[in-house]
Image 1 (cartoon, rainbow, N blue to C red):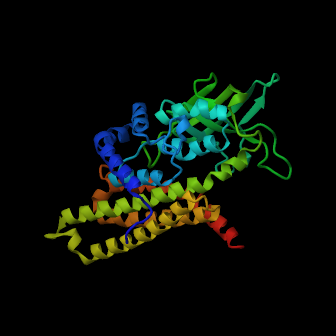
Image 2 (tube, rainbow, N blue to C red):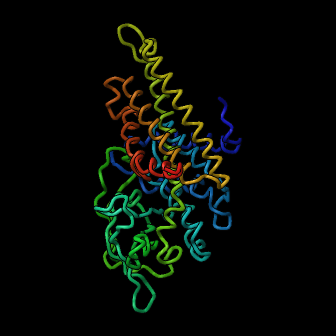
Image 3 (cartoon, one colour):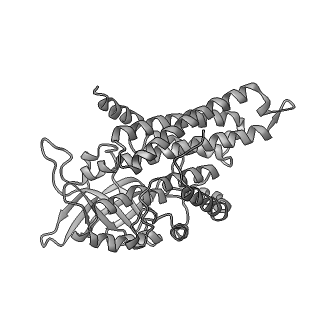
Length: 385
């Protein structure tokens, strides 16, 4: 079926991006994969390409295009090539909405121009050791100084994507104790300059997949954060976090769909070239049936993604609809990628083959941004159950 979600502008961007990936990423990706991180200079190249500024208003150096579809194109093209842009997805898809939606005019003028160029890379720090998805249970604190000029930040965060290269980090911290009837009260968002004394990056965590997306532990010891770097209003951080969840979850759904589509592409090419018992693997009926079933699932996921993309650009995507998209697409991707790896035989288990990397990368989709179980809870609640 012909896709109608993209315009000529999107497809022109796709071709530019595909050429960039072939020239600037593919030749170096194995090296980045082994190192477990992309080089910092690569983000300047993404800035020059314009990927960081698509949704940033023109007065701050961006293109001023209010559309999530360009982000979807990036997901599709990186998956198609079997590569990654490191932690840049967090920089744009997770951090930018907070600046645009709750940042003051002064903050936007100060932060957005270097955001667009890649001079300042951003990350967001929510999860803490021992708390997991229970953000209301966080123990990181930010106490206002006696003279009211700064917050004194203390605590630790973990699983922070982009934490190694980040120049600015949106840190969730308690500025007030929780209320008896509202554990979520008292959380605020502070933008921390990583050059401040008392901030440190701990271990770069070794992950099963997404190896080029640097993921780190962070520590804050008496970090003095200027009050001018409070993002939004004090004690309302939890509500701000909830506002961005539909886009975050749709981003994961799109990535999962793109990975599944890439897996079918990789497997189809492999079975045509691979011969066993004097025949190509593609000639066996089981191979045809497996790939046909996988393609049907990918097409269904594509339809879900396209409908959700239209909804988010129209500002109509609800939390429950985003949860449905994430649940469906991530579950589809897990099945499709597993079956496509099986068609590779033993070579599917070797990480020099992109299908093996996809298999590892895909697993976290059902965990971060809210587990599949949490998605089911949200959907059930929306059903009145």
